[in-house]
Image 1: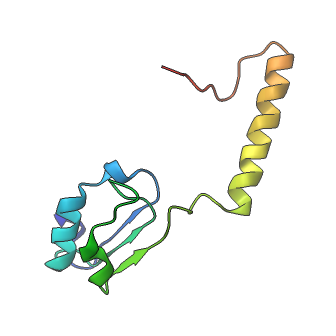
Image 2: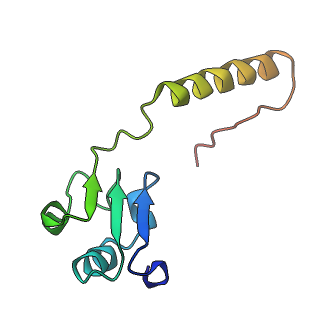
Length: 98
């Protein structure tokens, strides 16, 4: 995170565990990075209380995926997978239940 520098902003809308939250909080409090935009958290629904007190942080309630564009893309993927399945072709996206 330090490589971002004092003007760098980290955005996480993927998975909370992608970022070391303890290190992130330290970097933000110490102003080692410019800020953060977070839609996911390491231990949801628990959000570090320090993040609420910072003016260089934007928090959202894990809803970044809920856009009309993401639903349209998902709809297209489902239709393409159904077409592939019924045409005996490889699926475009396969979910494995390991």
